[in-house]
Length: 96
Image (cartoon, rainbow, N blue to C red; front, side, top):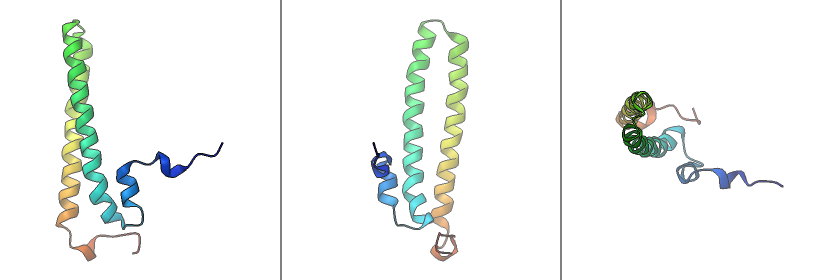
C-alpha cells in the first residue's frame, strides 16, 4: 500500500512548501517552539503526579528535562529573532 507522503506532514510544513528556506523557517520555528511548550506543560503535569506518588528521583530527572526543553525554546526564539532581523537578501535561501 502506497502512503501519501503529504498526509504525514504537519500543517506548518504543508504551508511552507514552495517557499524559501527563510520563509519556511519563519513558519516552522514558532510551530516547533509551540510544540515544545506543549511538551513542557505535559511533563510538568506528569512531574506533579510523580511527586504525589513519591517518585522523587524520577520527578527530578523530568525537572531537568523540562529545564533543558525551556533552554531549547529560548534558542528557537533566538533563531527566529535572528532570522527576522536579517535583511531579506542577506538570508541564504535554496535559490542562492
